[in-house]
Image (cartoon, rainbow, N blue to C red; front, side, top):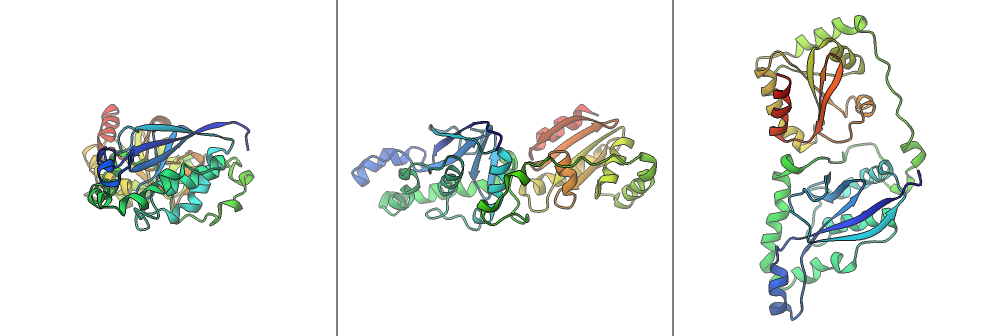
Length: 316
């Protein structure tokens, strides 16, 4: 632990879009404020369950602006430890395992709150779906709520920043995580002299060049350092095979490689070259980095096509 304290709060959104509050007195004889979706806010990010464990800038999700923000307390747990915890529970929070009643966004934030501050979110939030959606009004609103939650997958390209890989070899029980190991500095790779690897890297580039794409995969550290040093300007896409936004932006990236032959386009599957992702501190996918004459010029995260085009235009 680094003894630094981080504020933890809960962003609360109404999935019924005001209808629960409007009609609940008529149907239930009591006021229900909302059908809650929640996100846990800490370390400058909002973490939530949306077709997987997601993280992005607070208050920028598809749910709009929260109708309430509730302080949960403070934590001394470092971000790296928390995100290892998220990896350890990621198999429980997938699109296939989502259940509106039993395994939803509020169950996720409740588990996160217990880990971070030692107590869960308010019980009126976690217990509301089963109580309310079994009523006549709940059944009436259920299609609306399901439409909103199902929208998560189609909107990931615009709003989705990070999904924790379910296939990573991580502890199944977060209590087994050793913070000293997690926080241990990653070894920095040594730059291999260009004259030792440039020929091999160029051969790799020629082998992967095709008529429908000029994107060259980087498959090891030596090739990476060689190619960025030998390229006047290049753009690199860091991705994984399981990432939805990565798949969506892929054809756009490949099309740009054809339209801009004066720029070198590379991609890196971070599951296969993990040491490179660690050394460059790539924690969100897709991540794009532009190098000019061996120096990093621009870096951004996310699958927004307009953003990708804007940065490519800056180096044309």
